[in-house]
Image 1: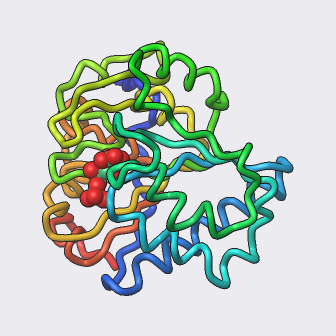
Image 2 (image 1 turned 180 degrees about the horizontal axis):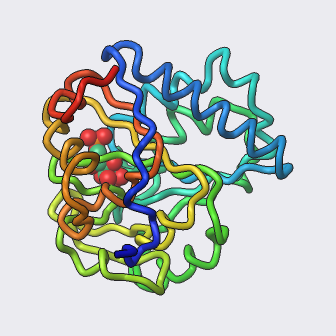
Image 3 (image 1 turned 90 degrees about the vertical axis):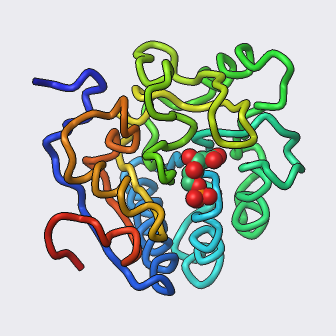
Length: 244
Ligand code: 6PG
């Protein structure tokens, strides 16, 4: 049966499992290559960044020697989700990305498109962002929660049923609760999806996402099953067959 989001759930992920101290560098190398490839093929690269804490060292690793591999003036940056806080708030995904990456590479500020989730009218902010997003992101970076959520698509939330609107305001169970998030069609349309997760608390969700029955409404990160996954050993510990 084809899945509603059109994500090709029978496709197996490309899986890379690393020691914890090697994960960020490996994911950053993959990102630099994906951006360089998109620029070589199409003259520009669009990327949506993940929030949370896991990407911090990945983004930082992209600012080192790897930064020279990317023509940053050809990169257009978007976000997969954002918390309803000011852009300088410590909980802001934009602030995290700016501090770890965007302020440290020569990317034109006009090419960084933050989600204005702090706006009083979050529905209008969501619609405005949907208008900014390209039809197809070249690279979509995703994190994963222990409950299997990704971006701010939480298990069994109505946002998981969305097939038309590309960005929605949501109230999630993870603080800060009010957020904007991309929806399943945006994940389905992305050319390259990369999942980066670390830690034992992610192991069960990773196993359900990769080895479990197809049930993205219960395990939203399954929408990325066809993608490239970077896990540390702890996050990969519950996967069904030996990998490494
Ligand atoms: C957010 C997210 C969220 C995050 C995961 C993993 O804004 O909260 O984008 O989906 O990626 O919850 O978060 P950690 O990397 O902090 O574990």
